[in-house]
Structure formats: structure tokens, C-alpha cells
Image (cartoon, rainbow, N blue to C red; front, top):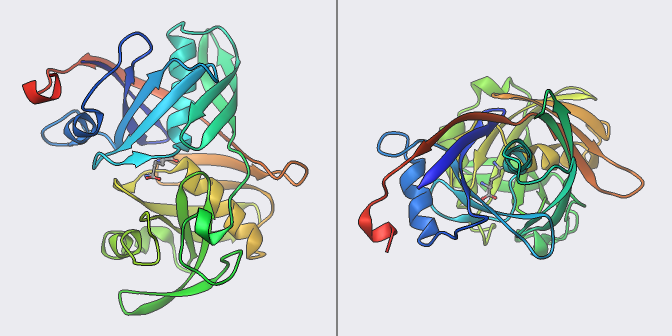
Length: 284
Ligand SMILES: N[C@@H](CCC[C@H](N)C(=O)O)C(=O)O
């Protein structure tokens, strides 16, 4: 299987061009290639496909083989791939995802995409659509007991579920490996959840670490960063336009007041191309 390794501020995926030939056993392959010791090593796998509804389609898999409805860092890389690999010459493109069609604007320098702005759509705040088991809408600073401690969570879906927790200490010091899995698998999240731990530095600057559903800690999460700014606004902690520092780099987020859509701007990077021989049972 031919693949391209790409990352959006350190959130790395194996990208497979399926515009001409489809792939079977995708869940198993995602798990296999994501393994950092026995595979290629990545946070998951993303398939780039042709689409009848949009310019392209993106299918996203986490490292454990589960499907993610959307991937903010991944969709910027898909945009870079299709432009840099000459599958399109358009600098405004649409990509279909399990969370609907997203619209992207590409910044090109010397023939290559260096930055992408994505309209990530409107945040979903209805508990049954996130989904989270909660009494009130929106779910803002709602108590939840995890690991014997009461936390205050704000829940937002950007097509996929997020629980955002504001903390007062530097995010680098947070025991993410210990706490993250207990949020991910908590009974209040029927489809599990991605969880962001966030410290507000000032009204336009936040820092965040993420525990992703199906992949564990990653260096960045695009949908999670959008959910973080929405949660910050709902809690009165930040402005609608903010920069979020993640372990792998920065993302610029704007929750636009006029159309209620969240806009994410950030980089996309190709690391290398390769070919991997898959186990026989994954090729049948
Ligand atoms: N890293 C992604 C999100 C990937 C999917 C997520 N783990 C899920 O299962 O919802 C991003 O950049 O948004």
C-alpha cells in the first residue's frame, strides 16, 4: 500500500490516496499502520477519496481503528495533499466528511500549500447530539466526577464529541495519561469523548493538551481546539478570536458572531512518502 505521512502541528496520520482505487479492511489497516513500534507510526489513518457531493471526501480512522467523524488537523493535510499532488488546481475546495461538507481556503507559496483556513461549521451544543448525558443545554461548567475528583466540563461537538476542562496550572504539568482515559470512557459519553485540558493565558491566548478518543494523547487536535474556544466563550473566559498553543504548535480560531461558524487556520506538512506490505488477511 502506497501512503504519505503528513502532520498538522504534530498530529500525524498516514494518508492513502483512494481516489482511483478503494481500500478494504480499513479499520484493521488503520490499527496496523498506526502502531509506533510495529507499524509506520501515527495517530491514525486518513483516506482521500473522490466525491459526488464535494470536491473530495475524507475518511478518518483513529489509532485504535475506530472512525472519527471529523479531523481538523487532518482536513488541512488533505487539502495540501490534493493541491500539491495535482489532484486539483483550485485554492478553494470542499471536502465531505462524516460531519458534513467543510469548505477550505488554501494559501499557496512557490506552488505548495503552506496554510489552510477551514470553515469548521457551527458548534453543536445539544447534549443528545454531542452526545453527553446531561440535563441542561448548553452543557457549561457542569460537574462530573472522574478519578474521585469533581471537575467542571463544558461539552461541544464539532461533528465529534469534546469535553473541555479549564485548569489553573500549566498544561505541561497535568497528569493526562492518568486522567484522560477515564474521561474518554466515562458512562456519560455514549460514544466516548475527546477531552481537552485548557489554561487561559489571556482573553486571546490559551494553552491546551488533549486526550483523543481512540488515539490517546496527541500533540494537537483541530476539532478540540475549536471546541476549546467555543467553551472559553461560553464560560466568559476568552474572546471569539484566539490563538491556542498546543504541544505541536499554534492554531488560530475564530467563532464568528455573524454566521455562528468556527474558522480554524493552521499549517499542514508532508513528511515522507512510502510503501508498506500489509499482512495477507488485510489485502484479501
Ligand atoms: N485529531 C483530530 C481529531 C481526530 C478524531 C478524534 N480522535 C475522534 O475520535 O473524534 C483533529 O485534529 O480534530
